Length: 266
Ligand code: NAD
Image (cartoon, rainbow, N blue to C red; front, top):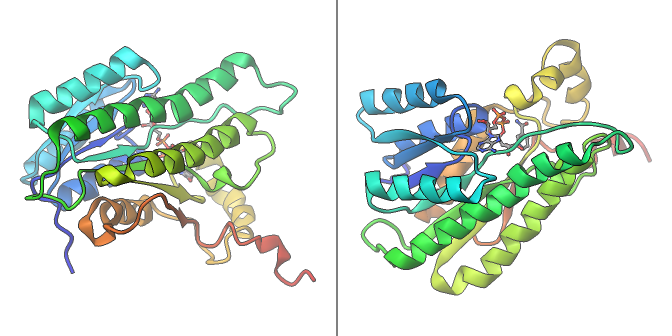
């Protein structure tokens, strides 16, 4: 079965690298027009947009720091200006600033929470306002809009040395479920994806060489994930094939959250 998102417009934050870039490509391949948001480096986002256009799709690259309210307003305004509607938000931007809790600076705490949690709130709020303003578009989807938050297995697994990151993702889980409860009656679907270890720039140190062998002990399925593992789920969650999936966190982790340390251990 081929999933079609033809006629729909998707906005992917942090879409110039890693999971966001793979998801932007997959959404475009499924027929959606794609807005690729980037933070500071325009070139990879513009290159990806050009690649999508060269393959017959529709895409633009738009810069915005999603932790800043005015820049989020501009990002959504540009989306409407170019494509006239919004149907899918993948709120994907995220970062880590790791430190032992006793060494963690307030600046690093605020940066991580500002992007990973406040940024997700700002983008979700703008998307919801747009979905409500444009109303149901039954020619393209059964839902009035779809939001997919990018969370992490660390929304539930505590992570020593990463308190800001784990707290932000725990916040994303409750933000997602609360919004879903609030807007479900409008036929707006809200879900999240909670990846485990997926090979991207954010975790290059943990997924290469001898570190990878250590990491694999935590993954019952025996491999580190690829960005496409997550991108495929994004496309499904954005499509009507998942029309009754609402307020759910889809864990994509090769079993990392199955307490693998308990294998053979009592
Ligand atoms: P990545 O570093 O390639 O992607 C993160 C993206 O977010 C980058 O494009 C970056 O420019 C963007 N970004 C950061 N701050 C921003 C800001 N203020 N405004 C706009 N964009 C900003 O890493 P990734 O692995 O692709 O991460 C994508 C998402 O997936 C993140 O939310 C991350 O927490 C989550 N995640 C990744 C993994 C993994 O194993 N790779 C696991 C769990 C969750």
